Each structure stands twice: as C-alpha cells, then as structure tokens.
Image (cartoon, rainbow, N blue to C red):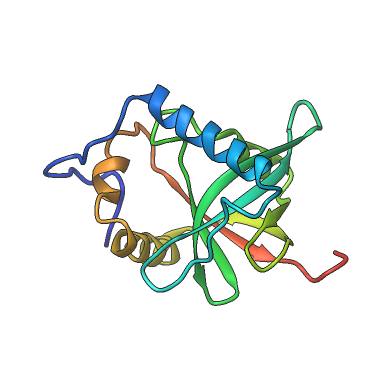
Length: 160
C-alpha cells in the first residue's frame, strides 16, 4: 500500500517556497482579472483539475478562497491537504475541520461540498490514484514531517 511516510529514493525538484507562493498569487490574480474565465480546469483522465475552494475562516469567520488540485472518485472530488508541500497544514484544511462545508468554483459551475479525510484502505486507494496522476507524489510528501491528509469533497444537494 502506498503511504506518504515511506522513504523515497529521490525527492523531485521543488522550487523555493517564495516561488510557490508567488505562483499561486499570480494564479489568483489571473482568475480575478479574467472574471473567472481563466484559472479553472476540469479533471480529465490522468490530468488533475483546478478549482477554487472557499471556506469559512475558523478564527475570523470570514470567507477564505484558495485554488486546489482535484480528481474525481465517483461523485466525490479528491484533493491533498498540502501547503505547497511545506510542513504546516494548509489553512483551508484546518478551516474545513472546524466547519466541514464549503463552496467550490468549478469549470461547470459552483457547487457546495462537505469535506472529510479518507482513512485506511480508502486513503491508500486514493493516494495510489493520485500518485498515478503525479509521479513525484511520494517524493514531495516525504518532505513533510506528518502524513498528508487525503481530503474527500462530497457535493451537497442544491440549496443545502
């Protein structure tokens, strides 16, 4: 079974944190500048999608938005709780642990979701699927001191 705590023979190249941070800020700016026409991508085959996740800040109570990569698992969407592969847990995941509902801006339109972490064999299966999409997954994850959560986003009926 795949695990992100297993030793990796060679960690793939990872740019400095400031480069990763700048790239995501540029992505958000492009999305805003284009009025939402650019920056989202549907998951297809072995290509992950990009969606904008909006959560409620666990301390501020304000809406917080980030872009996440995802793939489909039946009706659910699957993502990784990583922070540019840095050590800290991403704020969006901490927000979803406090309040598990959020909104996703998707290429086909917005949806409301509820989130949970995959565990056991389900986590192993989803980790393996993500590693088929991203060959460097285990190497990137080996840089983190803790296990990376595999997050399942389940769409809620309209009008929740």
